[in-house]
Length: 370
Ligand SMILES: *Cc1c(COP(=O)(O)O)cnc(C)c1O
Image (tube, rainbow, N blue to C red; front, top):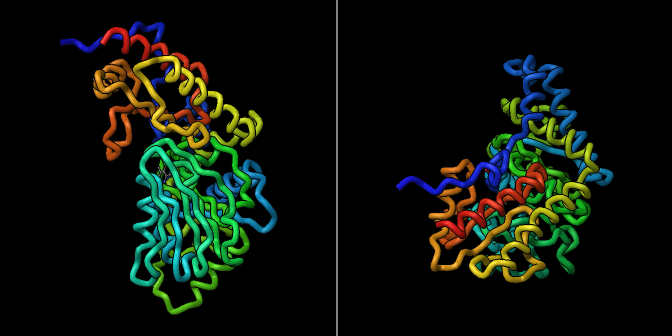
């Protein structure tokens, strides 16, 4: 049987709705072509160092970086940063808010022979708990947005925590799409393939003076730290607009273009408002249909950038996502390990409202005609 064909006029012009990697715009590709002469040139020379410096500078502007904070970067994406944190930031014991796959991977990374076993506040998928202060914990970690479930958690220092405890926030899918006061964190880290619409492979960390001091303190101990996980080396390199090893220049150029655009439309307050409005359209649509329900029950916990919608058990969500895929609307499948009858839609900064509206028209059509 041929898959259901969605009428052309209902389809979004760009069918990419994945929660990362996410759509890359034609303007970004033009930027890449316009700067193609630096591709294939040395990352130790001025043209690439200037590019890194521009990206660092734009991130500082975009996040209104507080005095003394620095934009540090390295290779390996956010997954590598979990190990960086365990090797170079955690002193004795970490505590975690874990409410999905990414938060739990961060916990695993901090379960090491050289640290005490982490304290973990976990909750069922689609919900979240809250961290409270624990004496002796020197690093608190949580995701700003749990991409696997579509739950977000506020970025706020844990009240009553030891005075030198660090607040380390995985902002991979949140950064650029959810408002954040960076002063409420010591390390706000992310990779560029979500709201920043770039390719994967790098991590960026907005680091407070306390976090920079902690990295130096740990580097001074006799703990063995591989170069790749050494935050002091990453900090030293970042101050020179370099990375320990060769970065992907395409990733940096695509990110530069997206940051220029995000700043031009009004910066973080504008992009956060955009994502909040896009996601609200989807949550409202779910409320309007009896066969679709927001997976995250508490509206305060719902993500403005990753919308997870449960589908009535009488309808196979895989049939919906397969029809969408056959019609060019891709990556609306739920997180693979969540195992729910669900669709997941990213409403990142680069996804226009018109695309979300078309997606809804397409979904209505599929639900009526399956
Ligand atoms: C995508 C994602 C990651 C993983 O990022 P990589 O760059 O692929 O390692 C980590 N945390 C969150 C919250 C994510 O959304």
